[in-house]
Length: 207
Image (cartoon, rainbow, N blue to C red; front, side, top):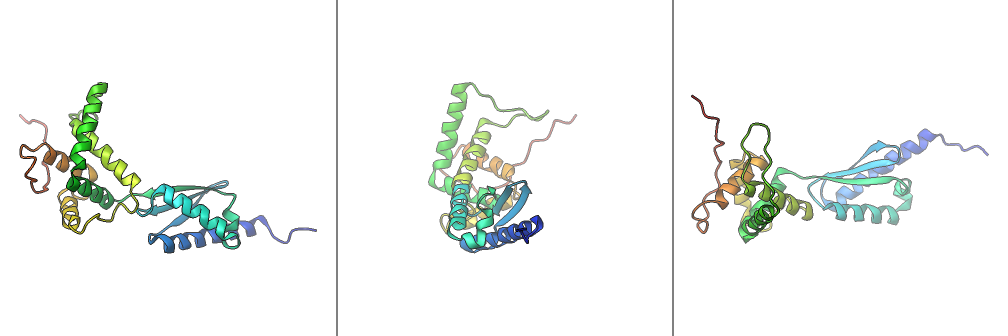
């Protein structure tokens, strides 16, 4: 007996289920989740901030398994997960680590490790290499963002104005914000936390 459906019917059904799964995940997580077709059996689940990769992967698997009638056509697909982290998430993690003192501790530890291994800061083009603390801070904040669920949310209410201050001073650029934080870490009066403010980038000498 011939199958009454064409391959296009199954493709449309799977696309519909992918759209519905995205809506379901959005309702569950409170962030906009989309399933984007890649190629072959591959689909990409992507969302801004929100749950970690492991949390979303687990939620996707459990949801498909629990609702085969609604999402069964996605059960044999290769679903990759990708979170798009915002600059606000970066600022929120940096401010939380700055407040609890772990930022200075972890940066110092990473710098010591780099020196012990004989690693030197990379040189990008003709620009002078940044200080070791700059790369250590970037790496630490990146790890915090990656491991934190809803990293864009402030840990404490007191963090909110500081996050806004850092975003404004750093022009919503994580590299400029890193410069500001390193400048603060290396300030002579470490115990008296100076106000977060923009750091002037040195220009080349002109004759």
